[in-house]
Length: 106
View 1 (spheres, rainbow, N blue to C red):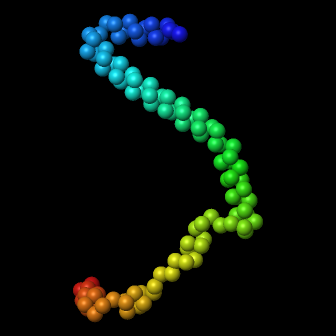
View 2 (view 1 turned 120 degrees about the vertical axis):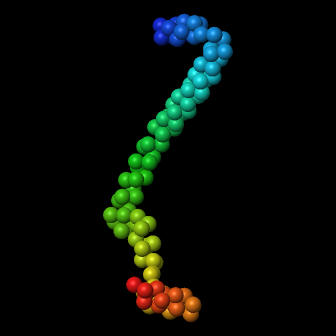
């Protein structure tokens, strides 16, 4: 189906030399491919929304009931940072010497 808009575009194209018509056609093909890809993504996204919303609702309920965590809490509990002195004792002698010299310069 040729619309009035398409007729206008075709007349504009006809006024150009053939080499420029080819350039415009190449760009239009790329633009149309991008639009089709976006439409495909939108359709796919729309199909998954109901399932994603239900999964999010279940996850919030399980977290509220204490049956699940957000994944942050366990990671934070297992994160054990050494104290300054534990870290210092783990250094080799040359590193300790450099640390003392650096501290003296301050």
